[in-house]
Image 1 (cartoon, one colour):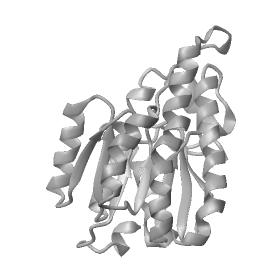
Image 2 (tube, one colour):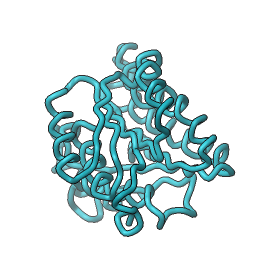
Image 3 (spheres, rainbow, N blue to C red):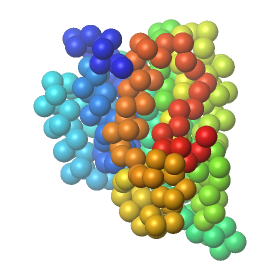
Length: 249
């Protein structure tokens, strides 16, 4: 994987959104072990963000904390633009996302908007300011964290399924736009991963649907992201890697 190919003295930077906990934190730490410096975006939990930052620095890499709300275009732009004047990240992992589950017939508009604007709106707000500098650099990797819910649909998650399905379409379209400039765009679609977001899932009903019969963990997802950021994936773009134990094939 990437650690086999990445020069330990490299100063390549990867921006990870939603990097302070769960899957995002695991991705940050895995990419730091692969030799990347990290721009760690988080929204509100400074204590958890600082903990991940320390773990990254203990690995000998640099970590810059970027506190902004991915769903807010102006806020994202105001934080990113000054940084982009000095450095162009080699990669971006758009992981930020939230759930506001509920039956669609009873779903208030703000719960629809919050989920769509964080995942799908966040894709635009974060990737759009970075894509032009990447095009000029003629290299880069973009990895989007989607979900099995965006592939199959999930009752009680119309908003979340719509957002994650939209990201899959965005991956495929953007991959075609930027491939000639040596920028690879791919996605990872986790299934049932053991995080705070899934702690209330009724496992007795869900596990029988998974051929491997168990939950995955955040490191499983981070491993797929590591592969997509490394040299072994240099001929892969526009693809979605499923990390779901066989739940969706």
